[in-house]
Length: 56
Image 1: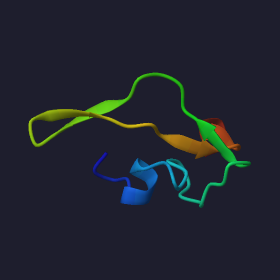
Image 2: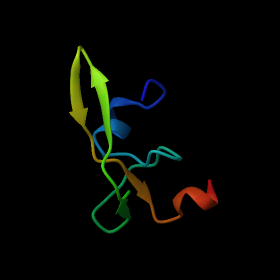
Image 3: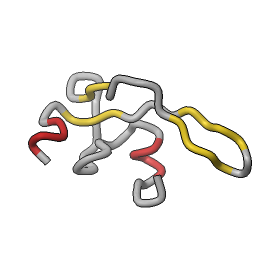
């Protein structure tokens, strides 16, 4: 999480390559994702571009 930008954390940009995502280009990364911040567990919903992690 520390290496991701706020836009990547919010699902606006791809978590792998950082390109801006749109409704047509975004793919939700399946599974439950969370991290600890200020002693609270926070859920987040990462998204990637259609190229996916294998291409990156």
